[in-house]
Image (cartoon, rainbow, N blue to C red; front, side):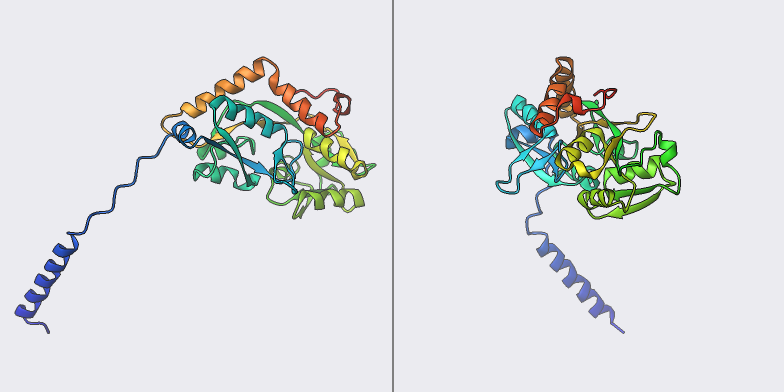
Amino acid sequence: MLSRRELGGGLAAGTVFRRRGSEHPAPPPEPAKEPNLARILRTRKLRVGGSLNEEPYFYKNSGNGQWSGILVAMAGDLAAALGVELAILETNWAETVTELNSGKLDLAYGPSPTAKRAMFADFSTPLFHDTYAMLARKGFAPKSWAELNVPESLVGVDTGSAREEAVRRFAGNAAITGFKTREEALLAVQSGRVDCFVATVLSAVAALKKNPQIGELVVPTPQLRAAVCPAVPYDDDRRFRGVVDAWGEDNRGIGQIRNWIMAGLAKLGIAPSDLPPDISF
């Protein structure tokens, strides 16, 4: 057992040690979180999330690494309005909200807003609406989502995507098979291993233009629409959210959003006549 003298000496030594340690300078305090707009203007860079193989929204040229697509054109115009450089950072729909919340991205265009996602990302007003549809094997053409939502329907999905989420939401009773990529799921439709692949009209017509043998475009009723909304990280300042809102309102009002959509489709050889007649943006 320690004597009082030994115990007192130990405490004194500890006191001396702490006193000496306190002589070292304290680490600097963490800087206050920089508002989104201030950071973008300071770095002169707008970081936008881009997903691979998501034509006509996003496309990355494997040869030169350049990005193109409808949403790339829109993001580029916003960056130009801010007087900064556009930087497309590769991501995927499943990670987008997380990367916004962590500060890795300044802006993203998907997935569509939900109450749960809005807890972690600040969604702006929709730029436009795409419409849910399906790429179906020949001979499979359900007229409604209710007809698809039965155990006899074989639906292929790319696991972890916004499309899988849509299928489980609108046709959860169907027999759903997951594939690693969208391309694998589309090949399953073409070979007849599954009946269909749920997508949106714009991505479906792009896939069919690339490979008409996949199947046929079917737009079930009622028409279900997917909002294409810019999303930004939350901050107390919210000026960047205001800039995005104003930019979107301006370009919707003058018809420029539709112009970017049609120009992006035209680059893939898709004419207005290739779109379903009752589809609007």
